[in-house]
Image 1: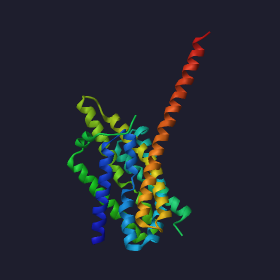
Image 2: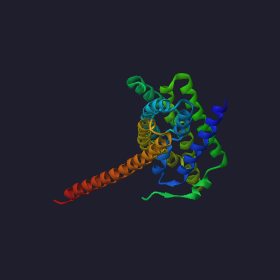
Image 3: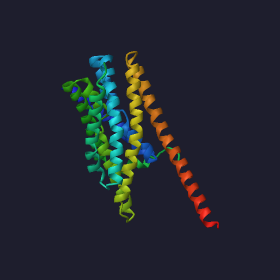
Image 4: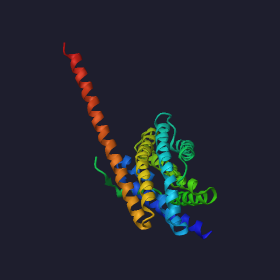
Length: 115
Length: 160
């Protein structure tokens, strides 16, 4: 339980810090870079190293590459849903989550995890 | 356009909006850990790049832009969607940096944990900014080329 509380606080603080930085940066397309900041990864990988060691963290970071490629596809889909289908942000970001899941798990099924 | 910081932009964000992002960020991190614990390290790794906070960020950006336009007596719906789309385009470029982060961390973590974090964050920042800068340059050049060819064909049509 303590581990999950620690994860929650660490994740919340790091994500909020990147989000505040994103709020104050201009232009908006540059601030958008922080939408793909490694905020969840920083907290999770640090805990992984302490708990399981560097081999576990290395394996986790390998499949994170698939997740990041899926995030690129997700962002492009969100962009198209907003501009071409004129959806508002909330339904667009929720619908596009299907694209993230599909791409991430397809890459994992195709290429597998770290050896 | 130069990259700059606008501190007054923080006043646009309401206190509960910071709270929403904190809670979503915390939940995403807990989810990533829980997925790793239940389904193994490979599935857990995917969730390190989960777009959990993006949903809240895009919605907040859209509502800020809409409010600003509506304050000026205009319909801000389309402007809000465009601002959120710009943010998504930036995140797509930032994802290239996130791939670099994961790859550099994967290669360097066996040497030293702290050095791996430093190298990976540096790689993320450099690759993300380079991707953003390259896209701006490409867009500027293609814009100049298309406007140049348009003016040449217009000139040919006008000259008998």
